[in-house]
Length: 215
Image (cartoon, rainbow, N blue to C red; front, side, top):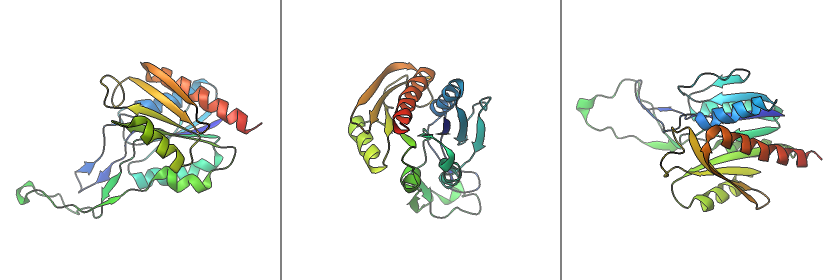
């Protein structure tokens, strides 16, 4: 298969030295890319700013902002069989980036915010029948309900949900636990384990969906 993976956070500038972002380390997305590579698939990884080494044997595209990630996904999604959106994309950005550093002596700045593009919603019309799209839902409450809503709204074949309020898993950790909700209504639960194991199990589920679609 040709597998396209997004990973890591995005950053939205406030001024030349400050930005808004999130706690994503990119470890889950990188684990997915490496698992796909190890399974013999051709892999392209679109990565936000992370402190991880580039995986060998994987085509790496580096981006910073949500808009840059959207542009990269649009460029490469048509040629993939499976898309795994593991990136934690910033939800908001300042409407205007200050040209100069905001001075502390001026007090807290008043910043007008706007939503960043929802990448999966934006590219949904580009999806071909045989393609498999998978998202991630990092939640702290109502995990199943939120994941199922996102899967429906974004026309996904699967969504991997994880409760990031649990200690020792999720953001910045080497471990995770997933519930993979499928469009068929079935759910695959992955007990707490390494992100590498989570990635292998997820890839197996998505490969099964891709195989059925191509029959």
